[in-house]
Length: 447
Ligand SMILES: *[C@@H]1O[C@H](CO)[C@@H](O)[C@H](O)[C@H]1NC(C)=O
Ligand SMILES: *[C@@H]1O[C@H](CO)[C@@H](O)[C@H](O)[C@H]1NC(C)=O
Ligand SMILES: *[C@@H]1O[C@H](CO)[C@@H](O)[C@H](O)[C@H]1NC(C)=O
Image (tube, rainbow, N blue to C red):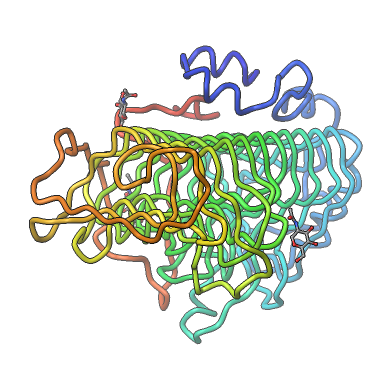
């Protein structure tokens, strides 16, 4: 589907629409449909030696099927369970797709990326029945206190889509989009173990649209890294995760024109966090709107002194023209961790930060506070004006709940994190990712 029709159909606000590049010059997603690719050629991995027995290594069959279809066609991974003992690099395809009907299970133990796709154009990976998955069996590493390979990484891929699949229990990161352009990720579920280092989706590049995704882990939900511009992330359910973020940011940060909207976050470290420690460059023209949170440690959070990151050279990343709008719900304990926390570099104060309609209340106790340091703009504890000077810290305390804070919950919230010592079952891709919202693009099968 054309992204423009999709956005017009949704009646999305123009500020969000403007974040993606003009579709007539920069179409998003595959340039040819999967039906067209099926009509060109089908390379079924079982014709290249793969056996759906959960034991025979399918890596050579996948590479051979790719080589036969890489200039147009579909690499078909049919129903059944296929083992991956060696990792696959699929380099240079055009007008091709992977139909992941069955399940790929990790049996090898090397590091790196189980599936690495690079220098491709007009690419799609999806499951036409919506039941395809990659099972990483990460718990085998995690119960030893170790990490293993990442599941799926795209590098230098243009005009692509990833949809209607599940990525489960990665031994490390689940999905990384490294320097990718004009791509779409949607109708996906990611379910990892309950510890750091198991990122959901990390992305950087140009003109990327991520929507209708659920992530469980305890690290990045959907996170933008530098450099990136023209990014739209919407209808995301961080279901016991680390939460969405931007960072970590360091030297030569270059991020602009990013919108996150309709983000539901439960039991995570934060609803949204900008994280840097020193560094330089700029984050600008970012809008974060319609956020709902419950049971999160932090909510709205800029931390320019994030000590989990090694101090980078520079006066600090400049956070400029960042708008937060329409945040509701509750936080764990607003008296110990402020739900509104804007900590800017004293040597590089934030400018033009705008916070509007922020109404969050604490789940424990009856007070909460807001904290701003060296942050200029408008709203709440920010210093009003367009100066760019150090002023120290301002706090304000609330002793009554702000009006309108109450926000709906999603069905089926987790009551505990997922195991590090037992296998995580493959879930089905859900049909809603934000209270009251249905996916923008219909599920491919059975919806
Ligand atoms: C950031 O600092 C490095 C040196 O530490 C410098 O080479 C670079 O030009 C700076 N970048 C920006 C955007 O100021
Ligand atoms: C604020 O966000 C909620 C969802 O949390 C949405 O239903 C509502 O329409 C938004 N309000 C405005 C004014 O956009
Ligand atoms: C959230 O994750 C839990 C655990 O995997 C699952 O049981 C629940 O169904 C999820 N919620 C939704 C709405 O998908």
